[in-house]
Image (cartoon, rainbow, N blue to C red; front, side):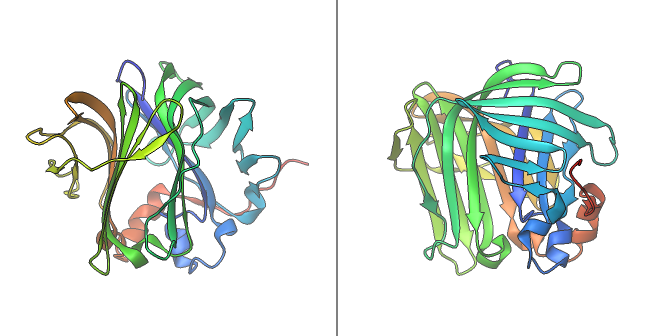
Length: 291
């Protein structure tokens, strides 16, 4: 999120593109054959890119994840993301440039999301600075953000019905919330505070507070002090099964604006969604590296 609060972006590297209809239609047998670097920018001139590529586009050598023309790599003290993509319909224009994520510190935290560890959340750098230099007017800015990862050996919809996640910056670091309802009816309610040195402390989660549903009527809720009413500040990504937004809440008396996600896996299981997603997620299986 930019320091001025008017722009934001998200970048996700997939090996096994979880939300790709092409991966689902393939039976999810070959994750490397469905890889992607998904880039979405929010604010004036925002774009969405999510191209499903084949295994010939994937390279993981030398501490870097390269998928086709885009890459993420560690360079000295930062993660450098080189973006060279095309926006999805209806805004089919180039999205190019560099994004640098500079962690305040790296953590060693891993959080299993299911009792058997089939799904794991790994918050590498919950507190970080972000430097953005994209080749588009107004898309050169600095702000704050985070770097994390999710790992799984089963499809999300095999284990979960619904979840929400949020990362909220506060004066002494950042607080993250993971709330989920599993298909077996059990619940996950995890709250972790990270200080600027990367130290993690499990905390008692504040009460769940209801929010207004998304434009696609996805149910939303997040954590906040008793009596507060969390509100959306910016709509970032809105899909029939998924919502990402900037949200304002109050934690221990401190107002915070962070990134919030809500995911309805019961909706995602619907076969009717896959053709809709294919319009926004093109398949490009034949990429070859130069030379």
